[in-house]
Image (tube, rainbow, N blue to C red):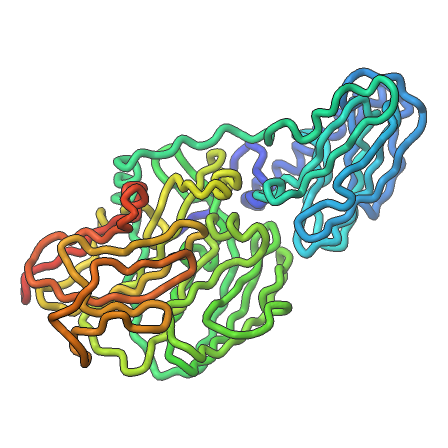
Length: 486
């Protein structure tokens, strides 16, 4: 799946989807005009609302008293809120009814966060170590704040403000839903198939190995918008502009030197399952504009996953930040064709927005793909010839669903999963011709390979045999042509 940058648009982007520099500049001008207009209106209504200026901190001022009408006490409750993991601390604030509330939000976490109380009141997303203030206004009833970055509220980043004292209405904090935009309609299988036919397929062939033992790559994080089907788009976060990201291929003992460059608008990271090392430094979340070096040696064979490990991981993986590292086992038998298939899930949110975190938590995907786009290998079949020995390297990137990989009309005479052969036939020693397998079963983050040689020309579908997932897009075709046809 190859992505293109979003076109400039007048709508307000979601966190993590701030768009092009032109769009950001236009929105900044619009924001300044809006802030000036609101400030003038507020001062005309009450000259006492003119705020003190602090050039070293971001701030947001409430234009109206939250909750039910209440007589102001003239007092101000001031609170400092910090971050602990994926939670605000304190997570509950008691404020005497009628007091004004001023919150200083200091981001003591390891990635960007904000604190909002709806669409119009809150801080911008601030980097680790930064602070911002929210002038909530006079508190008349309970209210709830949260972090609006994708998935953060669902991870537990909520702040309950409880109005205390005589006349406080019953608590409703936490009782409302996200003020989200309408969810995208889920495209039908026919719409997804039509979209796949008009798109360039993601390359599935495994590139040949060279003689290098040190392999160097730069992974650049980008954020863009992908058309899922006509009229349906989603934001994607990628390594090098595609999802899956770059396919790495090596042998046991090879060293991989990765430079991660974050050109996105929020914190991102990377975790290579193919290496063994302490996560603290190489897997840390880095800010926009930052970079890090990640070096590992592949000591064991496998089809290893890599992915963004910034919380919530389900959000970052489902939004496109994953890929495969193929490290070949020793004495691997020769084959005629080799393909790599990475299954992943999509949970559609608002049109042009990121993954719906609530859907991802429920683990019922809208779309399931091989190599980033549903049904793409139905529209653009993989090819082989009668008698060719074909090897499928398969990885389940998840973040949630299992994969039962099956080739309709074929049987696997070789199955290798998570470091071991369960069936070994083909050209290798063993029981070729007398044993076989019908599926390669994989849980999320597991990988393996299967081999088969097909005797007749025809169209052989390959599917996730969890059939509801195949019907959502985890489906393709291996076109087997007569021997010598091409």
